[in-house]
Length: 194
Image 1 (tube, one colour):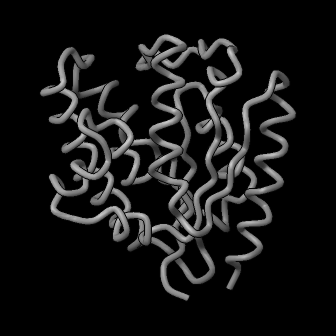
Image 2 (cartoon, rainbow, N blue to C red):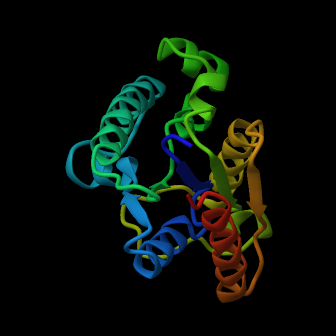
């Protein structure tokens, strides 16, 4: 079957990392959990973005590190294990100032090639889409609700072209949303079991 990568993506304040951690904890033997590169970079390397030029520089770095990090974890995969990724390489297309087409062109790749790296994507819609707060303690998040909605829409555009795209819509009951996402993650892991 080859390497199976499942990406968890979505806009700011969607519950991606909450879901990613829950699945990684529940399936320690089954998944190799790849952390979100952007949060690591903003926590330890890059300052907050203040211009389109800085945004492009940050996304170039995230693209390179994401590829390299996934490669490292791929080398650790045992038979019947899955890479469980908190975000994926195509996310950069949603953050690129000029849009995804120019992002993939700038990275000297194609939208289709980067989507094809992943066997499935579980897209968590941002709470901001439902007009709910996205304040959750992530110190690297600086978006207001309008920006979070805009980013969610752009990321949805990037990932929804994937043939195995699964949307978990925003809802007021966060625990219910995460439970729905967990059930979907379980089904995906079942589909991709050896």
